[in-house]
Each structure stands twice: as structure tokens, then as C-alpha cells.
Length: 430
Image (cartoon, rainbow, N blue to C red; front, side, top):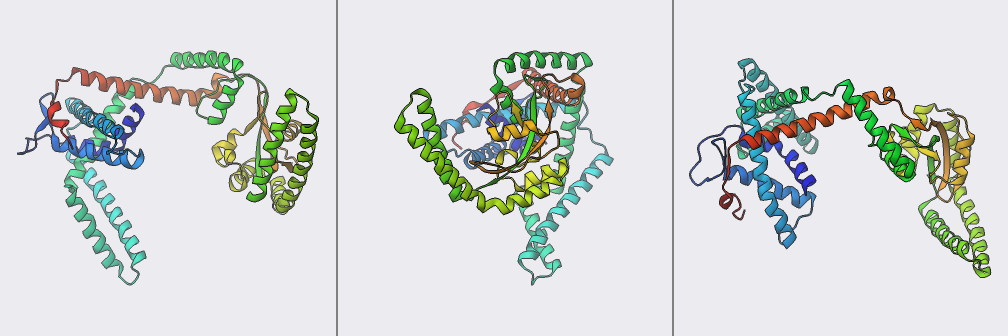
């Protein structure tokens, strides 16, 4: 639930800031649900945030309010909505105490110009859509309709140019406050070295014991690698799959063979051995028949690949491969690793290991189809030096420290604030 809560808070933060931007007196029939250092948060503000949570939970998480679990989740979000408003109020007060909400006339003028430009762009975009669907109308008529609809929508939401200007300024002030906190959290050279040493020690122990974890982290591309347990060859490939009907038949037969081989590895059985040989012969026939259906496409791509440089080949992979594990630029740049602990087909493995860097093997036929394999480079065993990863490590460590510093500061401001919550009001059925 915690991750979902973070996502929800981020998704409607602008709405929360709007609700908190200008505290005022309670309107009749709009009770106070909490106070923060004497400033009130009203039930109407809370209901607006909570209703957005409910809608997003229903759309993105499939929460059903008629079920017990759905009711429990929504009950939790009643508190989450209030805490989000309290947090926004505390942050606003902190920005105000530092003079960040004392906007100059020039700042207001620039913000108004930006808001009006954004409004004009959005109206024009809507007008263009109208013109595309109503070609008989003039551009002027479409623009007038779009403007009228846009202004009506703003009015329905209780928005105005002035309120949007205020929101933009407060968002900028919030960014300034974050920058003040973040600036003090930039790591030193000693911090960077210490983090590198920590990662190196952690990965050396982990990957030497569990090669699968190394492959998982490498393939995911989310872990900054500073240690490689063995020498590996990096490769990319274009997979040209058999037509779906043939592929399904081949894969099914391949699984039958795999199970028979597993059984025979445990105990020799003449009848199963004969069945295995028959199925292997049948598989060879099916693969050759399937290969004939994709031969022309494979030959064409192979000839293109022979003339391609690294970047061009990677683009070919992205455009043409049927392997969903290598159909993005990031995945292609990483490449597949061939070596200790890999799960690469033996024929592909031998081809990758026998090639020189940058070379391309003749198409290789497997149970998946034809593979056009390119050897990329060698990833050597051992430490990846700090200098090689410094930029990314610094960026990663800085981001984490600044985020932590911001969260710690917000928690400290909240702890120091005088906050009163009126549970009997904000937890009423909504």
C-alpha cells in the first residue's frame, strides 16, 4: 500500500497545492478537518482530494467500493488524503517562512505570461481537433468554440487565470525550497568513494555466490554494476520467428523432447529412447519446413546486417527482431551475455564465442526461428573501475541523497508543526 500511496500523492500534487494555496475562513457548512499551525484545512478541500483518490483507485487499481477489501482500502485513503493535505500545508508554510512566497511584480507578470501562453496553446490544440472533425467549419469558428468550451471548463473547476498564476508561482517556490534542501545533500568525493566500495563489496559477495542474480541485475539494467564474476561476450541478435502456427507446433514438440530427455537422464528406457528419436526426427523436419517460410526474409536481413555498423545493426534489431527481450535501444545496448551461467542456445553460444568483435555469424536455425547474431564486445571479469562508473554513480547517489534529505526535512517540519486532526469529520462517509 505504501508504494501506491506515494504514486497517488504524486499524481494529484498539483490539486493538493491548489487546495492549500490560499487559506481562508471556513464557509458555512464547510467544517474544518484539520489545523496546521493555526491554518485550517476544510472538508471541501479534503473531499476533492479524496474523490480523486477514489477515482484513480477505481481506474488504475480496480478497487471495488462494494467489497469489504475495497471499503478497507478506501478507508485507508481517507487518512492518506488528509495527510497529503497536511504535508502540502506544512511545506507551503516552510516556503513562506523563508520568503519564497514573496513574489515580485516581475515574477507575477512572467507567470501570467506563461499561463496565458499555455491556455492559448491548449485552446488552439482543441480547435485543431475540432477542425479535423468538422472540416466544413472555418478555423475562426472552431477556435471560438474551443475557447468557449475551455473557459466553461475552467469556470466549472473554479479556476481563473489568477488562480493558475498563483499555482504556478507556488509550484516554483516549492521547487526553490527543494533546491535549497537538495543543494546541501550533494555527496562529497569521500561519499562517492565510500558508496563505490560498498557496492563493490556487496556485488562481489553476491555474484560470486549466485550467478543468476548477476544475470538478473544485468538484464534489468537498473543496478549500477561495479563487479563482473566471469568473462562474458556481449551479443545482439535479430530473431526471425517461424509463422505462428509452425512455431506453436515446433515449440510443443520441443517441450515433449525436453521431458523425454529428462526422463531418460534418470533412467534408460528403450521405448522412450525410440520415441525420443522419432520426435527428434519429426522436429528436424518441422524446423526445415518452417525455415523455408522465413528464408527469404532472413537472407535479406542478413545481407543488410553485413553492411551495417554497430548503431545500424542495433536499429535493425529494434525494427525487425521477434525477440521481445531485445526490441528496445536500452536492451540492445546491454546485449545478451554469453558465458558462465548463461541460458543461450548452444549453437548461438558457439557462434558468439568464435566471432571477433563486430562480426556477424551466418543465420543460425533454432526452435525459435533464424537468428542473425552479432558479437559486440567482451565484458571482462573483475572490478569495473570507479572512473568508468563515476558519472552514473554520482548521479545516482546525488539523487538518492537529495530525495532522502527532502523527505527527512518534510518529516521534521511536520513533527515540529502544531497539527490537530478532527477524525470524526474527515472520516465521515464520502
